[in-house]
Length: 122
Image: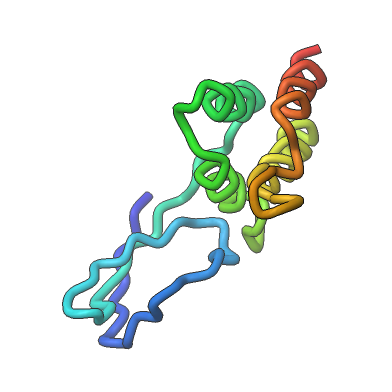
């Protein structure tokens, strides 16, 4: 369901942090002013979708940062609508997939990512 709401003309911050809501905001911007926004309900994800996100990182089709941002929309929501505990655990892992332990290496290696796939497909 889409719900349009007037937003007025407020200055848009240059960087938006994670939105702590269970919806995604689509914002119409003109001349750095927020004119209105639409609220779109997130659909519940499943384990296969999470595993496919890991595979897309391993194949180089998606960046770790993109997957982390995607998972973060669920994890950082005020009222996450994830019923399956295994999916929730996987989303928490994926929200940190882009963490680095140095300036050039990720905290979670490709071996770790493969282990996550094995762990959640058994």
